[in-house]
Amino acid sequence: MSESKSVFLFGYSGHAYVILESLLDAGYQIKGYFDFKAAERNPYDLEFFGYEREVDVKKIVGNDLVFPSIGENSVRKKLIELFVNLGLNQFVAIDPSANVSRSVLLSPSTYIGKNVTINAQSEIGKGVILNTGSIIEHECQVSDYVHIAPGAVLCGNVFVGEGSFVGANSVVRQNVKISSDNVIGAGSVVISDIVEKGIWAGNKLRKL
Image (cartoon, rainbow, N blue to C red):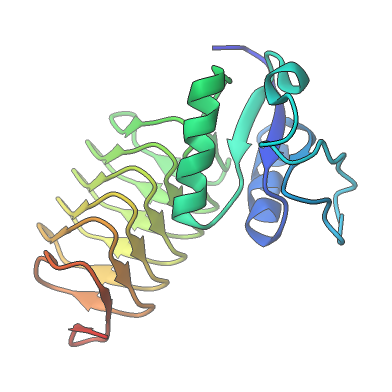
């Protein structure tokens, strides 16, 4: 792994702004971004390097770091697959305000946002977003390409399957398992396992 603190972002819109500021606060330098077109709005005055499928990304990036700054789980997965195929240097982006237990296992291209807490013996997969103020209690397993939205709480021993989304201010009771590719609506309360793929919402959870 390169010791570079210079980062190229892949995607440049709302979610990227949040990641970018966390990286700057952590002492990284943002060298620019890749996207399918140049952004109409460029609030951080970043250089545009082209669409990653149409330019020589490896030559441009070299030994610097790359990060997928896209909120959509499926797009983030494709970007990380590209990073692996090109042998690019991935890393974990952690906002300085986050509280991460020393026993937590973290995987590349995961973002841990402002005021996030991850407690003992949890495992976080690759390409995960743990958004602002979310809480991951002890011994949780958050699989690859999951998005935990702001303020969501996973109580102890929760399992979240690959590609799932847990909405803002949702609460998942301890020992609950959520299967892959599910969507949990904002403010939902999950008290039993979800084994059927779908969109779920409500204090008394139901499939929409």
